[in-house]
Image 1 (cartoon, rainbow, N blue to C red):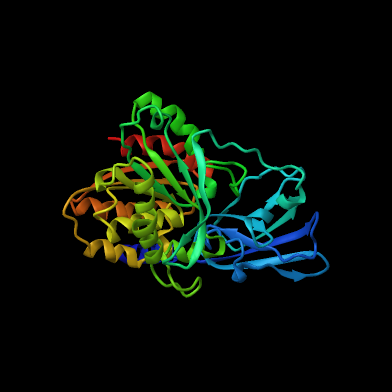
Image 2: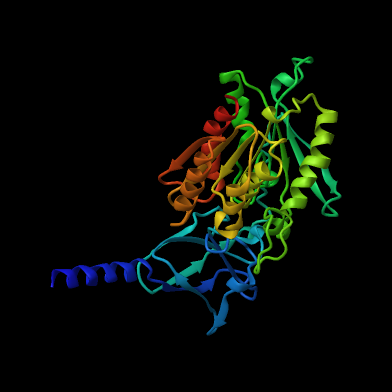
Length: 377
């Protein structure tokens, strides 16, 4: 009898732990732009603002619905958009709002009212917050490997023009429009320039930062080295080829840089975290350290096998960051990769977890200070 109860309890726990739920997300009405399509962008679709699979369906005069199926127990985060992050929902005054965050423990119906959209307020431009150390190198730098162009930013430390004989390490970062300037960021900036303006003076360690804008609707493929049924052919290899074969030689030729692996770094968040981790597999002789912030590991399970099979002649440094409010898979996925890299004995690993951290620039900004200190060790 005791054995039966034990097995029954075990079966219950197994069924419960694997339970999948249906979440119905309903928008009862919107304040403006009532005729436009509305999309749901969240951690369940890598925050894609124009995911056709997450386009809400109209029912009734004003109501719209999106049904999210097979949701595991835990927290989901999302926002409503009209197809781009320039047209994301806002407060009735045009202010940024927090992500909708819902803990799912059963089949659930959620209702919302969209009070406004960011593009309802064109007369309220975002401030230009880039520091004097930031400049745009090119608004349309050619990427021959992808046959397209991209805006390129650069941050030069204050000592760059004061110490003419000194060369500097270089950090390459993705999503350049979100790094330095509130005006170009879609949901707040990292504040890399403000952080470094202060931090470099404190620790007396300088670094050049090169920011590469993401490609908008190309972001999901450019930052993924693998093909994906939903998002298409991966272009991550070509994107990294561009950085290493085209952009880095240009930066090294124009600026006083330390060109070796020990002084060349790469970092990014979400899909940018994924491609940064992959970069040290593809180009271990180029990148010595990587910053992997809230990586979208779920979209590329092949990366785990690639790391298992890779070999390194010299140790590399990886800084992992994630927040506990980024969905239930983020921390376990990151910990799996952390353990794998530690087992190879070829990595120096630092992991930072924020208990209240969400999938947004506000928290990556807070994690940038400790990341930079690891880079400069």
